[in-house]
Length: 478
Image (cartoon, rainbow, N blue to C red):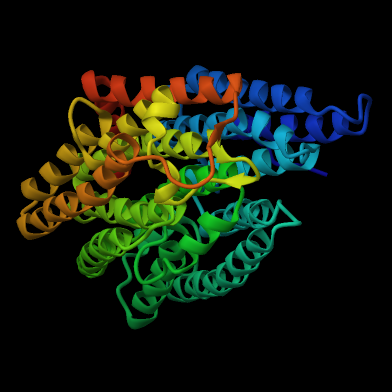
């Protein structure tokens, strides 16, 4: 038989992660059966190896599986973002799971498999590959969300995530079917060549946006986020909030910019409305939250709205700003959830605002680190969040969407209230309730240090990174 040549170079980083996942499952069967710390080390080593492979491949382009998988600067940039997210999550998970006696090879394998799905979404050159990688990522995250089997909230989070995710996936799959019916192909380049704008195509695009809207938790498809963020293990919440969003935006940008450019006037109007609604609803509802993880969930929704501004603006500046903001957001959000993970009650996670009253006296370093992450989320210089919003709003103004930029700026002012409120609780309120304890964790401290260095570097010297982001999206816009 004559088999077609397959270039595995195009999926080398994903192969590294997949091989590591298989190795973790194999090592889990071997002694010592009672200790699992080495599995976390192997998982982290695999993520670092994938980062090195991504760096080694930088500047090269190739395709595999008849154009269904694409290796280009865009995919490599998103692979870096996803690997950073996965690496930080593995570091945060080490002592977090050990303290609860829940270490297992399955956990780290699922994190790695979810990472593989995320990386393949960034490299997808075909709607079928987008769907398959989306399912690989989602199924792994569904299980991880319910990892704390003895906790009712964790099981509820997994069930809600699964049911709503399956519902959104059906919309996405139906959208693929309609796009195929209109163009006769699922390949992104061939869809672009057909330049179809018939009714079948328009309905298909709308259904695809519903599926993507769920994955990025854009309004009105965000209702799963607060319950899942609260019920899932905090380390898993960090992965859902960072890596899965980066992957969903990676696929969304490639699909819209590469294959659906002929319908840009239509989906730009839809995204304008989604961006405004997502920012406003996320920030306004976050004000009313007393649970910190629920507040960060609505904050995450609001940041999706900011990133949609870049998609509406379009072009190299707007789309490049989205990629840069994803990098900043990954470090900032993973760091914020990392502090939440390290600060806990004796017997449960301390996630209410009252739990953080007086934390600056008891845990001054962690309170300071959390404050810096919150300032970056607001957009205060010299942190990366300020530069990210500057580029996003600047791209909107440059493209003539001044009204949307004004809405974004006003929402930033609203968001500063609930972020600063938490800082006030930590520094200006007397301690309340049960004495809080901090879980010592070298791995968790290392994750926070990496995230903190990331937001400072991206805020002080952003030019090289924004240049890389713009260079990554330039080929998509030709």
